[in-house]
Image 1 (cartoon, rainbow, N blue to C red):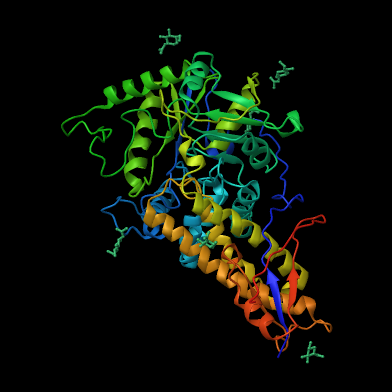
Image 2 (spheres, rainbow, N blue to C red):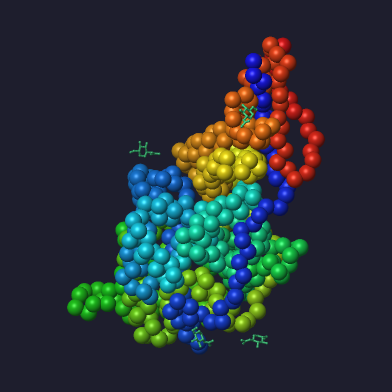
Length: 514
Ligand SMILES: *[C@@H]1O[C@H](CO)[C@@H](O)[C@H](O)[C@H]1NC(C)=O
Ligand SMILES: *[C@@H]1O[C@H](CO)[C@@H](O)[C@H](O)[C@H]1NC(C)=O
Ligand SMILES: *[C@@H]1O[C@H](CO)[C@@H](O)[C@H](O)[C@H]1NC(C)=O
Ligand SMILES: *[C@@H]1O[C@H](CO)[C@@H](O)[C@H](O)[C@H]1NC(C)=O
Ligand SMILES: *[C@@H]1O[C@H](CO)[C@@H](O)[C@H](O)[C@H]1NC(C)=O
Ligand SMILES: *[C@@H]1O[C@H](CO)[C@@H](O)[C@H](O)[C@H]1NC(C)=O
């Protein structure tokens, strides 16, 4: 009987420092005229930032959102958004859009013909289409492990670098339910971002900051690194949708189009311009410098992008003709350059934005512990994934290829702020688990073979003699390999892999038959 070698799955969190995303030197732009977006000195500049917030699974699964199925649950199709945004941008070089979630963009990019890809490359090079945040998803900041945040961000950034030779400049965590100082320094400044933007901080804190013009701060998230890892942080005055009356989603019941054709009824230019100016001045009242940002988008918006762009084109034209304030298409990078160029000082912030309450007695803290089994599953696989990648590296890719890639996408998706947080619907959470289980089973097979290579005396991977199996169910003392082998023989070999960067003593229990 061949000796059965057994790998005990040792799940541990890695303590060694991980290779962070390549740090990027950022030369602060001297002024904000980049990509043709011109700000006007001495006027209030209203930066219109077109965006769509696309959850990587929530009420529907990630693929349902992408293809636009199950619209009875939520009318949302990210494919429509990306298709129509690219068309709308190509129609007018003044228009801009920021693309955030790579889980969707990469699904879309992979199925585009070269002609369309060439159009997108042009839009990216000209700055009309800018990738911000750039991770696979917009990760949660409370229930995640920092290594998983790094991994899911690296995955997206690597693709953007490969396909477009760009590195995102701005953090765009507009929806997660509170914010961690780790995000500010590690997933912000250390990542090469020069600004971080989000909406959800405690409602009382927000009121106080509004009154003191303190929504925008320099965030020094690390006491150790101090000012060497600080980041300009912009907290939105309300949420990530536009001021009331300025959303232009195609089927929105309350849409108020800019009607500027005098030959038709309901001409409303003066009224719309006045409303625009009033909303702008109100926001300027609690913002430092003469630059304010309007987040022109919402959840799964721009499904027919022309509706937004047509109305924004008109607003920009008529508002600038009116002249009281100046409106422009912008991005978080252009906005940040303008703030930087203003050369004023900002309040400094050090601490977390946890716990988050959006109104009296409405604390978003239940999600720290909800769906504990899913949270555990994600954390357990996170450790396993890391160990597997070490083993993969030790064997060398030339032998086995990259067998751990099957966990990349599922692990990254699981860090979404409705995934590991536990705030997605049950069927969506089941979908996350299914993806993880499929990925993990492939990685497990790879690890089994990889161990054969590592332990063979002649450096080959011939699986002829050694046969590995793993024991994920030791929690219920179930492991057929040990139970069956030990009954008749003395040749059980147990292999334990320690993925930590240091020695560790531990007891290992294995079931044997009496
Ligand atoms: C801003 O940048 C533009 C284009 O690079 C340049 O022509 C202009 O002189 C700059 N203005 C200032 C005030 O630096
Ligand atoms: C989504 O749509 C499919 C096909 O119509 C259906 O089988 C499935 O039950 C739907 N899922 C949910 C969660 O409603
Ligand atoms: C600006 O803020 C001050 C002080 O909070 C307030 O009294 C005033 O009404 C505000 N003006 C506008 C236009 O909102
Ligand atoms: C910015 O402000 C500092 C300190 O107030 C000053 O020394 C510097 O000249 C200013 N730079 C510009 C470009 O205005
Ligand atoms: C390497 O060793 C294994 C047994 O461990 C054997 O089956 C295989 O033939 C050997 N390969 C070479 C190239 O020697
Ligand atoms: C043992 O672990 C497996 C996989 O992690 C899990 O599905 C199962 O519920 C656990 N059993 C018990 C009794 O905890």
